[in-house]
Length: 255
Length: 365
Image (cartoon, rainbow over all chains, first blue to last red; front, side, top):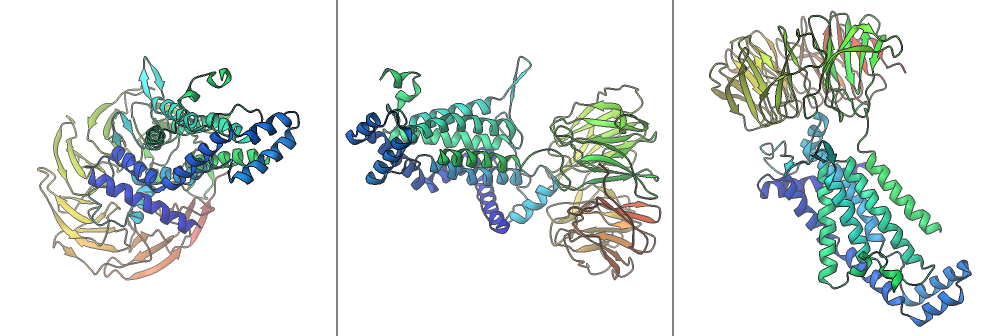
């Protein structure tokens, strides 16, 4: 298992270094282009997520669905059973909108390890890097230039303003993750809707979690998060699937 | 409810897995540093350990933390201070006073501290007279006055660029600094002016050495050994290695001994410009510098072995398997050779002249 994981990491490292070489030794740009590549590769998963979210959205106006919400409003166990029945009958997976986000975890972990290995801030990392490279004549490129804009991509980022270290990237990561989660969240007006509750929970946990990662780990990982989130938002917006109303506090309650 | 639990658990597991990639000082995170004053062996392996050379007993431990992590080899000043640089989130360079031990923590008090660096300390500083030349991963060479009596030091900064991972070398007139940005730089030892700066086409993780012929020799990740005129910086490759040259060559008269990460061990004659004998290939990659002993050369390999090689013909005289992986240059201590392997239960192993273990060192709690 460890060997397979190492090959996976090595693949990421080589693609990153190849892009780095092509774009003129800019590792930040390499991460951004690599993220676009990852989004293309994981396109089917994202499509499934959007399809799942749309199905959940349509379900809210379904008469059968609304009827069971009223009928079993005081019996949550029975309501859950009935909701599952409707999901089965209509071929909807209520977790399909969460799954792609969860599948990102191995990619995030692999990318983090790839960035750390590629930037090689310790001697052991540099030696491991030498064994991960399949590309020819890369000794001229090593070590990779870790500077991108105001950041050192191998270290956590912060900007000192009036003596205070502000983790700007961590804030941008949390905000863009929140926006993306909210835009893709199905609008639900029915109490006890498990799928909507799950999506709501994710829209709170994920920004906090990814924001924490951005605060703690190499800023190269934050560049990946932000690029991925922005691409996601653009993708939803261009397809007209984004629920912009979800960004307005209290919009659902008024409805 | 169960699915909600599974979802939250998955997120937390992901957070844990990612968190496991970072963290505090861990034995084996990278290779440790060694230095000795003849009586005590100082080991940096997350924390700083002082070990009695006679019996391998721990004298004290200066603990590492998430902020302070020590792997750079210590430097020892003429008045016995042990200088260690942190690779944690706090990039301090700290002088420990082994003769002034805190009775409560049983760790030495700090004699002084320098907090002006902006990145990790990987290399050992060079002590030259009353000055300390400390290379940092931020690309600067920090020059500190050892005699100013200050507890919070200032430094003269020479901007070299790139990550400086190797101890500088001096011939008294010039200081030679190697960098991962592929360069070798000479600075004036008195004025600190940059005299010359040359590119090697590959990163230089080891130090430059002065050969018996007065020329400067440097190995690099361009897999070449280069010879420099120390005055002008004019240079040319004198040997193509099979792979990256990581280790600093060991010098004995006209001969340089060094290894490469393919596991080849070379003996290069600077007078003739050729190899003394065909490279020998022990059993694994070589990143540690060879150690010249009375009648043989000791070579440490990543495979965890020490090879005693004849200086005359390169024949392997004896081999001992220490275990784990050895990246750190072994340290001589009288008749003993101290080895600091990774991935073993013990942190140090003291070997006698025949390679037999005299004592292992495992840290006390």
